[in-house]
Amino acid sequence: MLLVGILLTITSINAAKTLKINSKKSTMTIFGTTNVHDWKSNVESLSGEMSFDLPNKVHSLYVEIPVLSIKSGEKLMDKKTYNTFNATKYPKISFNLGEVKSLQITGNDINCLLSGNLTMDGVTKKITVITKGKKIEEGVYEFQGNLSLKMTDYNMTPPTALMGVMKVGNDITIKFDLTLNELIKTDLTSIEK
Image (tube, rainbow, N blue to C red; front, side, top):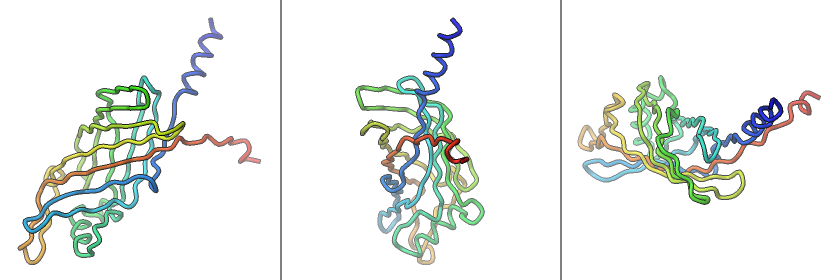
């Protein structure tokens, strides 16, 4: 009986996978409006990890974005963005999983409803995100989704430009397409030698 318990424990440990966001293959874009024109900014750098046992459970998910990696292609707009996020004091945006509200797996397709804490400009709020994922190949997964937010919910004041003539709208939408690769565990004894 003890042997069966040990084997089940080893099997469950081996079944857990840790995936790392592949920043070169992942995209995240922020969309918004002004009273003059719509705008978008691309997130050029992001990192994070996800640990799970499919089909049963997602253990953890953490995503981090350096504020200075948000780029619109216009220096003035980027400066306004960094000021709005108070990037000097709060240089990172982060999401930390709280719970998985639903998880449905059909073949290689994975649909999740996730709840967790999003922190921006030093303010943390609980959010819910719908993601559609897919197993691309062994050890490679892709997740897509979008999220609508209000800047004022995070105590951020929507910026203005041209002496207040151009006003940025309060609502933003974040669209993401994340590729995650399984981490290969390194044999620590070979490193020590």
